[in-house]
Amino acid sequence: MRRLFALIVYLAVTWHIFSPRKIKEWFVADAIMEKRTTDAGDNARWVLALIQFILILDTALLNVAVPSIGVSLSLDPAYQSWILNSYTIAFAGLLLLAGSLTDRVGILRILPIGLLVIIAGSALGAFAPSGMLVIASRALQGVGAALAGAAAMAAAFALYSGTERQKTLALFAAMAGLGGAVGTLSGGILTEWLGWRSTFWMISLAGAALVVAVSLVSSRLRVETQRRALNVISAASLTVALACVAFALTSASESSWLSPAVTASVMVSILAAGTFIASESRGANPLIDYRVWSSRGLLFSLSLAVAGQWVTVPTFLFVSIYMQRVLHASPLQAGLALLPMSFLVILVAPKTPAVIERFGLRVTLAASFFLMSIALLWLALTATGGNFWSSILGPTLVIAFVLPCINVSCNILIAQNAPADIPGVASGMLATAQQFGAAIGLAVWVSVSNFAYRQGISPDAEGLPAAYYIAAAAATAAAIYAYRQGRNQGLD
Image (cartoon, rainbow, N blue to C red; front, side, top):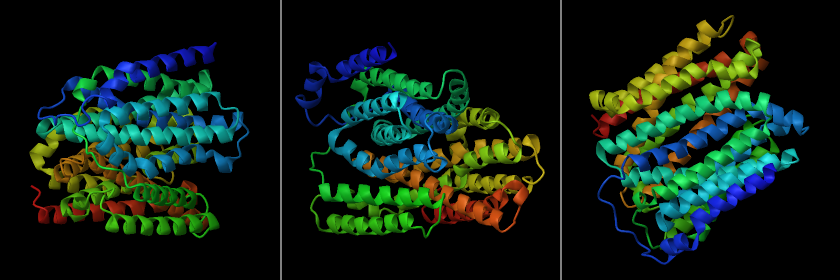
């Protein structure tokens, strides 16, 4: 009965989006839409922000459900992490391609397709009889997330300007925080009460609702597209290079930087990157516009986006590890420990544009990175012999203030420096920078903490303080870089 209901919902949504009327509107009507000169309005803003919500919700739900999936399907612990890694690799590997496709094909085509792929991947995961199929379903979800995420951010860049754009990006950050909070709490509840398969059904239903919502605001999401052919060699080589790097980073955090799998993936990524560079330099139709590489402001913004994710994202995992392994809390209790931070992010994010307007981007970024270093030092110094109140609550609340300030500031910087006619490529590069910043940070944090633990450094705290100290140093360096280089870039 559940399968019949799911099939009916999926067919109804698919017909609504891909009906003859819609197909005619997409492919027979004007191929190049009139370029918008006004903002898209609040309804479109909320729909786009909810796409960010579902992407974070998906990851947060599975973070909690992975152990139960492993037990239910007798999945070896070595493979359980690939329920998360397969999503990350597909997502990170396809983001730039998805952004480029958005510029060429259009937001109105890429966005619903991405959501439907997420729905299909979620349905596959809900029915999967084996661990390998769950991993495959997560990879399919990653493909859909890359398409939908790149298209949604491109829409925010292209359809909004000035204070309206800042408001949109702040709402994106708030919805990301809400997705983390809802996913963390509902993941534990659903897994314990209804089983882990219900987490996949939740994403399927949320995705179906969003597909309908996108169709209702479709008239507000029309953006001028580029009538250029896709450079297939560049697209394929770039995707392989990014996917291999993502594979190497996720594998290195679990085994060794010199393991055969990591070494082979790095070599393949180097060859693929060389092919991409050769194709881009010789071809008349580059995948990534040359103006991207010549814009110092854009490269500065992307480097800060990498640094921001490097020093913030691994905190979620490390706090959860600390709660469960050091304080011996349950997975649900570990999830609840992060709720104060998640809810504070929701409250702070909408106020971030006012903070930026008051202090400027340069000061906001530098101060945020400096406060992040303070929070990391707090986590490190109180880890041994600590508890939730002294070691977790205080620093995570500081991080809750820092996180939206860094993310929204970087998003605004990139939107200001990106060429206006390629919002998809700019959004793809932003999302790629964020994904790889998080992946690199996680790999380094895990490697450092494992090394420290093996060397007998802070064994009572699982070696976690060593990683916090390294990240604090990186956050301090990022604060200095943002302040000094921001002055050279003419930021106020």
